[in-house]
Amino acid sequence: MQQEPMSLLKFQNRFCSEEECQAHLFKLRWPDGFRCPRCGHDRYSLITTRRLYQCSACHYHASLTAGTVFHKTRTPLRKWFWMIFLMARQKSGVSMLVLQRLLEIKSYKTVWSMGHKIRKAMADRDGTHQLAGIIEMDDGFIGPKKKGKKGRGSKGKSKIIVSVESRGKRAGFGCIQHVPAVSGEQILSLAQQRVVRGSHVRTDGWQAYRALEADSFNHEEVVLRRNSAGLEKLRWVHRIIANVKGNILGTHHGVSGKHLQRYLSEFCFRFNRRFWEPQLFDRALNACVRTSTITYAELKA
Ligand SMILES: [Zn+2]
Image 1: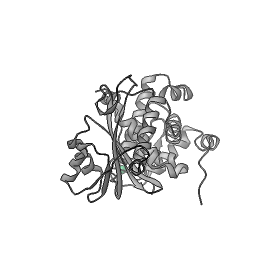
Image 2 (image 1 turned 30 degrees about the horizontal axis):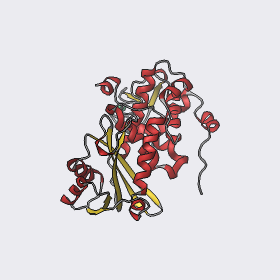
Image 3 (image 1 turned 90 degrees about the horizontal axis):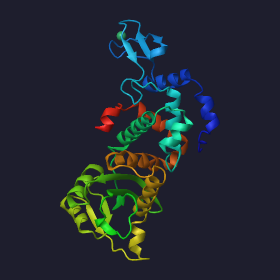
Image 4 (image 1 turned 45 degrees about the horizontal axis):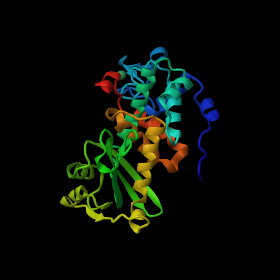
């Protein structure tokens, strides 16, 4: 039976206090009950103000947030939970300015880095997943619209390669990679990391895609003409390229090349879980608990 997605009201009731959020994190971190990371003892006392659990045997201070995206944050967990909820559930993504106002976060710098920490967790979650079966692969540009420039040579825009499993009437898992160039070298290296060898990869006639034939990918070159069967064969990848462009330009009003990959990963995280909407918050929160954080300095470096 399909579970109903959690409404805003239910979410607000469920995570109504800092203590509720903390208790929830505790369950995610120690699903079988507390274990001291140092001695393995299972009894503790709580130091609430610092989100620390003191081991009753060796007095080690186990941090609830160490090794997670929330490590050393001064922002209340409630705001984090709301932010993850809104980013995971809003199909077109949500702008950081909107979140800053909604969640009453004082500085834009704070909300901006929170957003990137969540995106990094999403990226880490999907980063090792490999695509299999029939893959549609194509490239595109993301960047501000300029007059009179078309095709693969557009300057000043970021180049992306999109791969998605084609399962006939629906698309499967997808991945979007920001690349310095749509070259044979990039295409092959991307496929080697993200596509299971022996898979069938469909592309258009751009010669760089022939690099796939250097490894054991079954490469199919599709002839694209208007209304042709070729377009149908690359329909999912074309749809994703159009959607992700709209998302980045529409919601985030353009993104610098330096941070683009994280936005692409956020888009993919939602796309890859679009049939599991009721679980999107839990899955995103889980990703945040299972990955280490990234600091503002590292983001800006
Ligand atoms: Zn201990």
